[in-house]
Length: 333
Image (cartoon, rainbow, N blue to C red; front, top):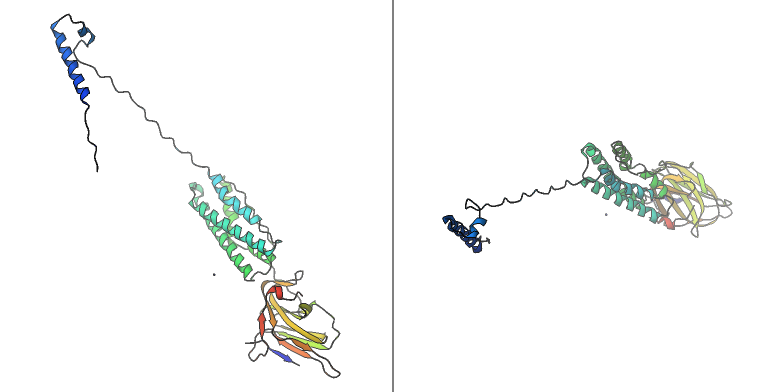
């Protein structure tokens, strides 16, 4: 449907005995036997008096005890996973440009995911086993929240780094981490983790029929704007040469008008969304940018002048086509 416009992703080993050992034993026994006749052979005196050899006992070997490994202290293990997450979160700067801001979200998400996986596999004292599982879950949720937020910025759910940063503060994963770390600290395991100080998410609005940009109104032309079917506020801009001449705030469910439009041909743009930032002159959430395909000519002669009416929501029977435009091609109010 169109807007309405009118003009009024085996082998075994064999065992053997060395022969030299057996022969030596036989010779020793024979010598002992010949000495028993009382002869004068002096060699008999060197043998044992009872004619038997005595084997020396084998030395006793005391086995070397296997040392018991000393477990790695859990505190440094915990800090080694958690501290980098706090550092990465601290790098997310809402004052940075969009590319840098998105890179910060990605780094923090990757770090939180690695911390969740590594901590989950680490050996943990029994006393804090339940707390560790809670912390692992919270870190995993934080990684998911950061990844989703990054996608939401790209899809214009959050149109400014400020509103995206405010949304970070609402992360369920981020809110669950401090409680788990407090229990770890009480058990003697400390970490360095600071929750980013994020602003509250806002839903600001302007008064209906308020000029955001007001040019000279010395003509007789009129533009009537109908946003009664809209679910969000809008800003309508009459533009010439890529610059907004007049920009009017139209609340959802409201009508507004511009009177005194000077003669000339204008492009008509409108932006809608949630939370109007007056300093940036843009919606910070759920923003979209649209242009009427046809231009509007305002003309005045001695007896007549142009009156144009537009609706900002598609209607059956509408005669005005619109196209989405990039924010960069939208005239700054």
